[in-house]
Length: 77
Image (cartoon, rainbow, N blue to C red; front, side):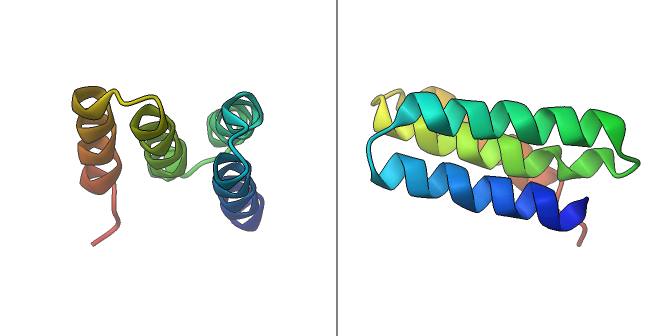
């Protein structure tokens, strides 16, 4: 499942490059769903980072920084 979460993360980033925030949101939602089902809850960092990138795209810089901080706080090292 770890690879599925990473694949969804990169899929979401690709959608952001294509300016499809809605599709990126679906990828973030799918990541959250996989994390809820799995045992490694810290992998939610992928969703937080993707959501942060989406907020940057929307010019919500403060919210983006908060999401990036959440993501970084969940790194394994």
